[in-house]
Image (cartoon, rainbow, N blue to C red; front, top):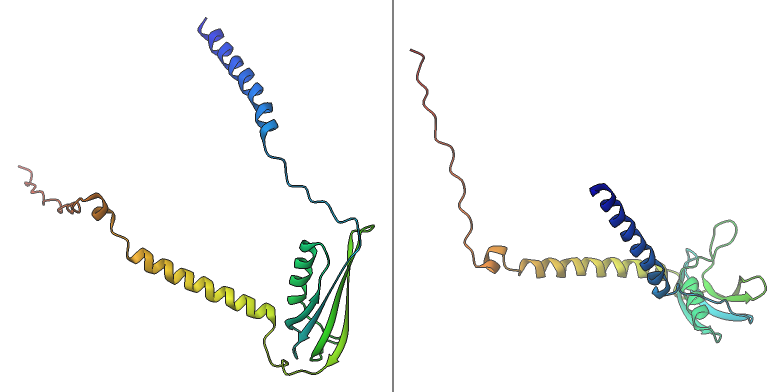
Length: 179
C-alpha cells in the first residue's frame, strides 16, 4: 500500500508539473526578432589615415535612414586599416563607402584616396586610443573600488562583537615511566 501511494503521488506531481510547463512557456517573452532592411542603404565616411595605415579619426560622414546601419559602419570605419597590398600605407584622407544590397543581404565596402598627406601621420590610430582609454578607465575603477573597500568596517564592527579569543596551546602531558 505504501509503495503504490508513493508512485501515485509521483504520478500526480508529474501531471501537475507537465501541465505547468506549457503555461510557463506560453508566457515567456519571445526572442528578439531583427528584420533586415528591404531597401538599399549607402553610407560614406571621410577618414584620416596615419603612416601605419590606421584610421586616426572620421572627418565627416554621410548617413542613411537606418540608424543601426550608420552605427555599424561608423564603428567599422574607426577600426579599419587602409594599406596597399604590399603592406605599406599612405598618409591621407580616404573615402570609405558602405553599400547594403537587400537581395543578397551583403554589405560592400569600397575605399578611395581623396587626398594624400596630412599632419596626422604620426598620431595613434582611433582603435588604439579607444583601447588605451578603456585600460585607463578600468584601472581607475579598480583603484576607486579598492579605496571604497578600504573604508568599509570590519564584520566585527558591524555586528558589534569583540573578536573571538585565540585558542591557547595545549598543556603538556606528563607521562610516568612504567612501573
